Length: 420
Image (cartoon, rainbow, N blue to C red; front, side, top):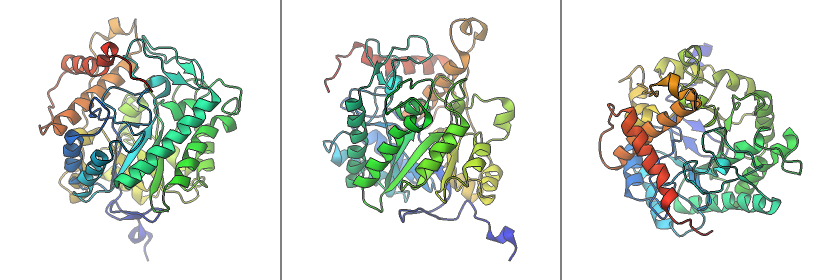
C-alpha cells in the first residue's frame, strides 16, 4: 500500500493511553478566560463560551488557567478549584462542552511569581525570591519545602474534583513562566536543596505533580501537560533541558504532551516571534521533531502559529505531531476546527495588536513583553464578549484593550486580601 494512503489525517480519531479517543486532531488550546465569579467559581458566561466552542468541531477543548490556590491567582477572574464547594457549577461547565460533542480538559495552574502582577501589595511565591523582569513586578517569597509539598497536593486534589465534576481530563500548565516552569528554569530557580541546583532536581516538582495526580484519578481519566520547548531567555530553560523533561515524563502515565514556549518576559507563544518564524506557522514544530523518539509513543501536540489547513495537515500527516493546537484564532472564529475540517476555510485569521509610540515606550519597558500582554488582553476581551452572548469585536483598539486590562487585573489592588 502507498505510504501516502496510510498517513494519519486531521479528521482521524486519536486513541490516548488512558483509553479516551479524541474525535479528530484539532485542539482548542488554553487561553485564560478570567470569567470566574468574585468567589472564583465558574458561571453562565463560561458555560455559554464552552457551549459555543463545543459546537465548533474540535477534537479536544482545553480550558485556561484554573488555579489551585485562591491566595495566588494569575489574574482576577480565574476559576479556582481547592475542594468541592463549586462542584455543581463545575459539572455544568463540563456538560456545556459535552453537549456540543467535544471532550474537555481543565488546565490546572499555579502562577508562582506571575501571580497577578498588577495587584500592588500582593506577595507572590516562587522557587526563589527573583522577580519577573517586568516593570513593577513584586519580589516573590521563596517557598519552603513544606509549602511545595502542599502545592503538589493542591494539584492532585483539584484533579480529583475535576474528574468528579465530569471533565475528561486535566492538563498541568508547565509552560509560559508559571510555577512549574519556574521550577524548571535556572533563572527562576536558584535553590540548592532537593528542589533545585541542577536539571534533575529542578524537574522534581513537575514529576511529583504528575505522579500525584495520576495516582489519585482513575485510569480512564486523562492527564496531560503543557511544556515549554524553551524559555527564549539567555541562561533560561533550554531545549536540551526540555527534552530531558519529556524523556522523564514519558514513563509517568501521561496521555498528551503539548509543546509551546516563552513566558510573559519573552512571549514567544503570542506571535511575537521573528517574521521568518511566523511564516513557517508552527513556531515549535522543529523542536517537536527532536522529542518524538524521547516521548516513547506518548501523543504530542504542538500549539503556536498554525493558521492554514495545509500546514496543519502536513504536521499531522508527517507524524511530527499527533494534535494541532490553536488558541488565539478560536477567540474570533469560534468554530475554527469545523471551518478547517469542512473545507470552509483554507486559513484562519489571526489578529495581533502592537503598542504605538514605540520609540518612547522602548526606553522604559520591553516592547515585546508589553505587546504580548496587549495581545493576551485583546483576545481575553473577545472571550468575554462571547461569554456574554455577543459577537467578537474585530475593531477593538489598543486603548480600549489597555483600559479593560487594567480594570480587570487592577481591581484586586483595592480589594481586601482573602485569607487562605
